[in-house]
Length: 187
Image (cartoon, rainbow, N blue to C red; front, side, top):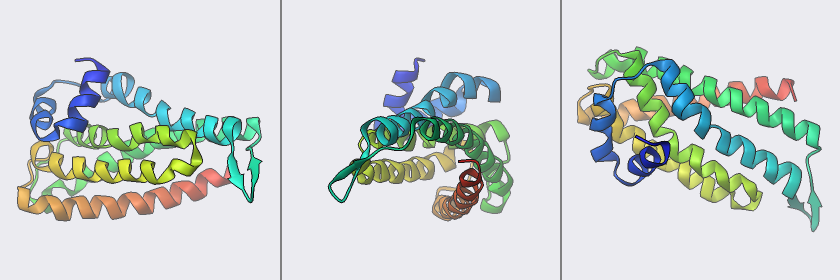
């Protein structure tokens, strides 16, 4: 299946797409090289263009992030987003038994990778920093994708999916804050 078709399917018909994803044979390197590494480029590149080439308005004046800072920020955000997906997949896998689910690292990585699709595609709104609310909406839709994918990918009962999603969300927010602090050291 093509990347574009998978993106379209998971965004527009997630309940029908999750069982197809669950049935697919894959491994972690393939999932990264054929899906995640490509999609993670969207917010990284859009953020660079938006902040360093287009700029943002600050009191009637356009402010641009210097190119070297923009490039380093782009690379750091790209690498950290790939690491974050893996870290949250490890957590989703570790938590599965707590929510009456089954541990399976590849399934957990598929769950986190494909549920992140909306947020990564929504990264295109970083081209114009004033459009950040649209990027936020895209990220919120990723939570819905996660919620619908948990019962299929982690075999957790549907009634446990909401609490499983909530724990992963809180954990992701904490991890994002920590990674943000770490990445600010290197900027």
